[in-house]
Image: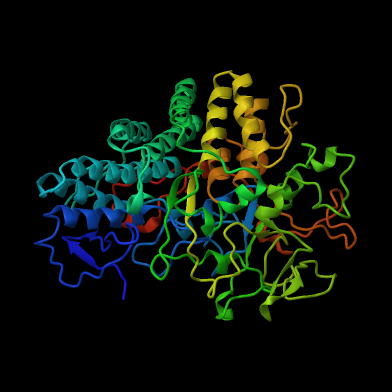
Length: 569
């Protein structure tokens, strides 16, 4: 049986890697005879331990693992903290924090506080210098990979929580560190990424494909710089840092977008795993060992559930009407501004990414009766009543998640598609944003249009940028770039959360959530009444500016009284 064995050193949980190269570097080997006094001594030991650190990358999940000793970072959860999506909440209010009734005991808000991973990484780095290496050049690369994971975690924590303890070495169980200033943590992240970039190759081949590359380091650096826009005093320096990092990636020639809407859709299937030139960084999934349950979580009640149908019992995530109605037509206009828009046939002639990202009313899907049978998804309670009725315990808006949904899985709990953490299109849009932030709108437009044109959307010109009125930064070019990010990354990660938080858009965009129109004849009705978040008052959300920092989970503060709580909690 493939598994990970765990060992404790004092009170720190130290995960010893149980991976060994075979078909790829995440193939698993059972190590029953390991002893803490004999491991971390050789290059083989450190190879296994390093491979285990790849588990610190986030997984494709809608919630953290309530019953896990070390809950995985649920990468999609922050998407429910935006204007684009909502979750009906699994196992009670607060699990996904969709309702914005945030408290220090809201479990979902702890997902980025990851000192168990920091302990593993620091222990690994302390053991590295004294280990015997047959290939000495690997020692530096191993250190760089481990430091990347640490930088990833600290960047996430600083963005989510602000001031956090900065630990770069293992500590005694009795130590209770205080928080370091956010600026200090950010400076550490940037300095680490600066130092390790040249220690890593631009690409790998053979069994090492999927390891951390120089491109991943630069992409994380660009994210870090842009995510600091919301609080940094020198915003120009943040844009400049992101611009330089993205420029290096682009000039490397290593990455490219795959052509067409088919190329876009492919990024969320196993056809893109390990081979797509669009993947800058991904979490790799190993069948029967590191799989995801995402397909189960987003599959609709009336759809095929695999051979073990009872596993498909969630179905509670949905896009908001605000998002659906702001996806442009193929003419590059908002539906409300396009005379050709037909509310009776609202899904035709729209941005092609809409139908790749969203399960829409009227879609024909595999039915529960069999993978070869079909049925029409219809969430409207008055039209062909079905198990997908929005008034039931179902998708709360009538617009379902679709990326990474794979009905060909025998069990929808065992998805094995790689989660694309950073795609090349994000690098291009970060570059555009950095250029726009420095006043170089003409150059920014080139890279913005590259992403649009890939899927057949028309180019913008300086004179026809979209008129964004809800959620505006005050800069037309940056508004257009953030709008494009909404279309490009819908339902796949935290990008929209990043954008709202760093540009302080919360009071403009976080409002009550609505779903499908109440009209029985016009599923794209833009002016009539709509159903409210599954006909529930739970999603009458009220924004508070203290949400720009998450609360330190109360359990962590109980264990360490030196942790100060963020204001408002």
